[in-house]
Image (tube, rainbow, N blue to C red; front, side, top):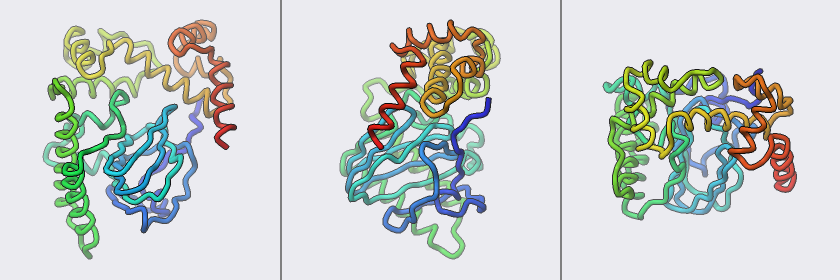
Length: 295
């Protein structure tokens, strides 16, 4: 069953949908309103910063209130909605997986960052003034480089690495027991496998074997990063897709269950109610009523 959510690349947000772009920065005061639908998905990463004003952003079925001196993170494939803004000053930085993976760290360059590709991470980050200004200085350096007639992609890629390190350090400063890098890398590799296979019936042991670790090692990494077991993480991914389809499409509930690899729609409804507290039908009704009220 095809998903019914529009999928955009960076060019769409600069009203240049036919132009491939691996990296871009735009400031809200200089930005044309993009011709995109809400809710939508990204094929790229986005880091939004707020200098002044407020904004409400939606990720999946949650809303987040952004204030001045804060950041907001959106990863590829997440269902995003720009809900509201007031006197908003700041901007947003876009980059693709491929752009960062051209860094000498190669394919592993995205794995250590806890705030990217992690549905369990908080997508918004309020920062102390000094830390925010340090991060803004790095962003401003990127803006200046992009304004050159021939900007250096190598320099921009290196500055992006610096920015990610600054953000991760600020997150670690808030956590009493920082997550060890090997656990984060293993968890993200597991998460990548789930994105490709969540509609299939694959055991935790088979996932561990595919990752060349033991089930115990996988369980320990998942518990350290998220507090959940691997089996619960797989279930949560199925439930996330179910909630998306119930809230934003008119697909029959039986078809939604089938798309998640669950042939028995009654079993799907029972599991959904156990985890969410509502039947699939009641959840869809609730979401439709909420959308009507907001409209």
